[in-house]
Image 1 (spheres, rainbow, N blue to C red):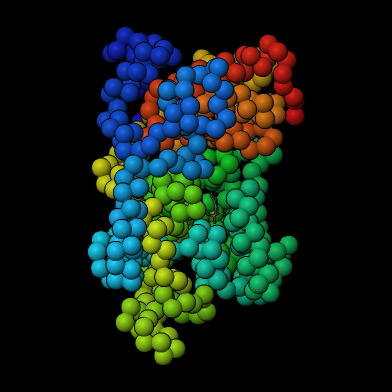
Image 2: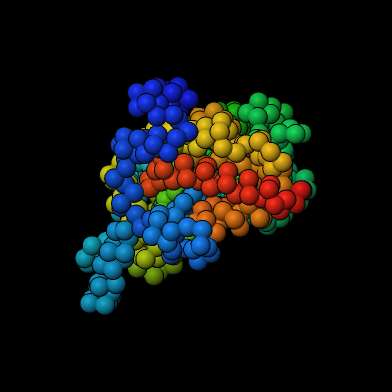
Length: 464
Ligand SMILES: *Cc1c(COP(=O)(O)O)cnc(C)c1O
């Protein structure tokens, strides 16, 4: 994909419109010209007055909030309530028959969405299964794919992998009779750096590859927002005989993915971040079709069997081919509906189109933060730890302050900003291509500036 040069684009649009890039009018102009602006109305976008911790002496309760917390939980599509209500109606009206009748029969409702989910991650329907939560799926996949031997027993991951991923890997190593101290390689960024360098990842794979069983990285790093080169890392790992799996929690529905093209071995993700499916929503797995008839022990349940075999109850296992053979339980129909609500909205766009907007939206945020409003101006300063190259990030920016962020976060919250803090000193903001607009970004940068100036004037901040 050819990269959009955001600074150049903003300059051109600024000249064309006659508005300065930093002006409120320019944000308004960008909104008007946003091809995806209609998508915002497909969501319930919170108002200032409906957020629980807003100070109504500082903001107008009728105004839109400044919701930039998609990296943790995206907003609710309006249609989700209807999609769920349909199933409540079915359940109330036909009980058991809901399994086989009406819209989305419950016994196959998960299978009905695999094709669309596959199109978002670049895979075929047979390589996708929608099941469980993400951490459970990491365990299910590693149980099957991580088969350590004396010679090849290590798992390579990032030193700052998401805690749940870290714990899952650590426990898998122990469950298989190995020692995490010697079998878990957690790759650190260089001293003084936040992101991992691709050459360091590739070097490590090359030097230690013959003892590594599985390379398991996140597609987009939850903390820094770094988007790894999935294709190159996968190829490098496979060249050393490793299996390469990906945790796509922060990449799913955020950036275009091409799992088949990149020849990834296996992957998993949750859908409640950019997949807008609601807290704890149904997670997904990808298993490359090369492993369609994979043998060896895995976690097995009745739902992994072929449809016809499932109800014979003769205890003769006849597993489904591909990803669906990894399923354990009957699909949780309400959680499937959460994903369907999102897919109904997603149908109106595509991940490629959404990504184009995302690159501009996040690039605009970066511009406002660095060029005018806030960064490195006074006693309180902050640095962007996310890569500045749009190809190496998704929509999220991580801001690292030189002070404890508790007070900054609290003051932002009072003013209707919803964003995420990581103690001691990082705030993550994610303007989401589906529902955020350029005015949200402008207002955030403006509020952040106000908050910082206020705290500096009152001397209300603690160093770290
Ligand atoms: C959000 C996230 C999780 C969360 O796991 P759950 O099982 O859904 O609670 C795990 N790993 C990563 C990388 C995440 O970003």
